[in-house]
Length: 100
Image 1 (cartoon, rainbow, N blue to C red):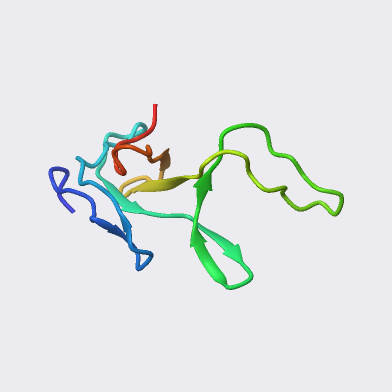
Image 2: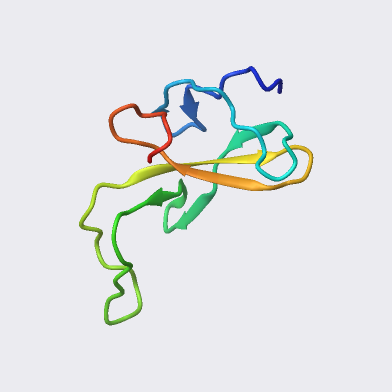
């Protein structure tokens, strides 16, 4: 994938709309990055990873308590030269620009 190409408009069959933006360059070697995602295992299969603001709170049985903040979808890029991974939490408003 050329560095001037845009990333996909949808995230792997989950129907998550994302605005196209330039692909980042690798922070380690300057190589081309390819878009992808890291999946979280659920009872029903796999879902894209999400980021929540605040500290992780576990319940009595060790599970994660319900988050109090709205989740942000996590986009991950992999360098095709060195394998470095870089993840970004997508912002609410733009749906595709990395959160600051």
